[in-house]
Length: 318
Image (cartoon, rainbow, N blue to C red; front, side, top):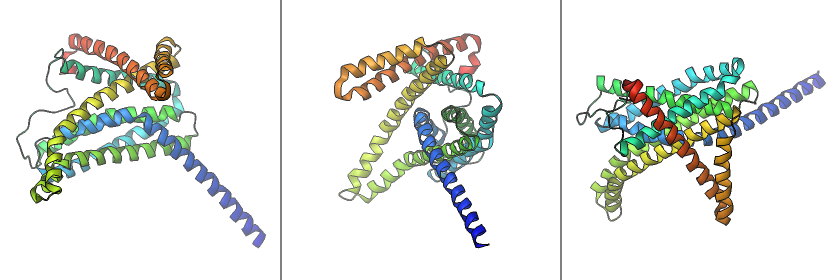
């Protein structure tokens, strides 16, 4: 009896070790997948504060909480099962879907650049309701409308995040895929909207510190209030650059997967040449040049898509 019990305990310990190894492996793969989605996360953090413009300060955190819940539903209830089914029954479709997402990101990034250059002036795009609002909206119908628009925009970015994650773990066992997708979905969502909450409330924190007018808190608070508009503008620029880098990289890698190696070869060669010429900081310079080259590819593709849509379906870009 005791021998059988010891054998059972050994079996349980063995299973526990395998499970722990699987979780460690899933956590490591989730970290790698999360790093690949960095550009999307920056853009998400840059875009979301726009949905809060005009609301009373006490409504900002509740709105972010609603958007966070909607984002978790997007990733865990809709996109995670869809991604797992795709990996089981149509794995060949992962690369084309990723490339479609890359083209969308290229279009979004290029359109922002074109707007800044004055080549593509128009109002807010469908799905991104950024119309001016009266100050200090307390909630109600306008809040529901803004939350719905933010969740709709999040769905697009979430789909691309989950697709990138799925491609990263495509060769892993089914359970590992599921765990990694869930980890990335939860961590990315809480991380992004946690940062958004800090950004949105930074002004209030600055005002509170400034009102104390202490020898340290006063200058710190006033400085925080002054710097936030510039920070948000910088974040928007970084988000646009990240979209172009990620979008171009996805398209170039997808073409390589489908057998057209020339674009990826050019990008990689440019990075290698730059890395060799830069000496000690070669790895960083090589990565930067390759990222810029991918961004240029995305800018060109995105501009072509935007111009075509202007002619064929102008409502899509208005």
